[in-house]
Image (cartoon, rainbow, N blue to C red; front, side):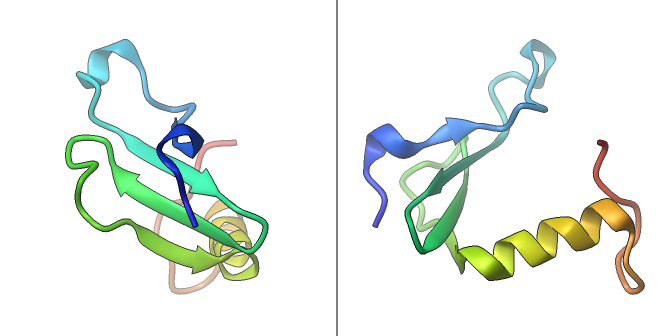
Length: 71
């Protein structure tokens, strides 16, 4: 599903993070997420629709989710 060239770092990762961030890769049907400090570990993989729903819930502060993502 994911080849090494597909991974990209979070846009929220900055120089003060010491290269510790979330990386994401996608295909036509799935999104994969991994910890940049441990790229050899298995990534979390979600169907695209489920991941989109999850991120939208974080942005809107849906009930049951604390906090939220910055816009």
